[in-house]
Length: 321
Image (cartoon, rainbow, N blue to C red; front, side, top):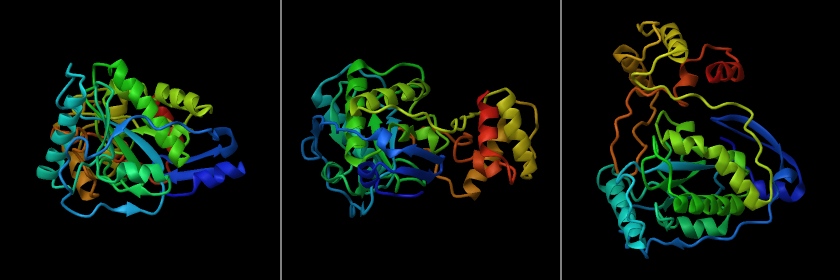
């Protein structure tokens, strides 16, 4: 993905393009120039008693391109909204990431509790964000961490909505990140826009357009629409024409799957094999739960089964219809 200095572009009122997994998006930098957003209250790693990282924290000499929204899955939609609980959740996430996933530290750069308390996740994330010119490499978006800064939102949002406090702090935190790095609201994404995962849950994911609008309002800019619809997420058990389209494409790639519109075991096996063959990371949704998402067909798998020469825009539009 291309990295470029949006802050320089904003000052010059240029027209710039961002190129990456999600396609090419061109927008007028003058149209998204922002007066800036103030820093919300962010509790650093020392405040919540973080363990020292197991290795070096890599700081990359460029800005992130995308702000990525996650949900933690565990400990679920708790009703303890205290700061002490937010600290506990941050420690639990770090322990899981270091002891179970084997990462050097918390995977995400920041965490947002159901009580609206924001904590620093990976060490040095707050320091580097305040500088506004570099990026702490995380481990929250498989195969795309160099371009993504992530926020884990405590809870499971597949069927339930976030708390008002979490939403309010999420808007403020995303606006601050966007302001620091000169990121246009259209580059606020969900985890599933990069990997085949449920994250950040269908309910929260469906509110991302609202989040972009709210952030744009805080920044004093309009929220431009993405020029392409996103790839749909298909899961085992799903049915319908989008599953049939995926099966047709899988068969064209040599996989012996039925074309019956039912995402059954053979389709799941084919998708799992294809993902493994191409080195795609999976099961990265959920900060504290090893959720099983093997066989999910999403944004990183669709490009692998497209026929050569396919019009991406047309296919996405067809699948969205």
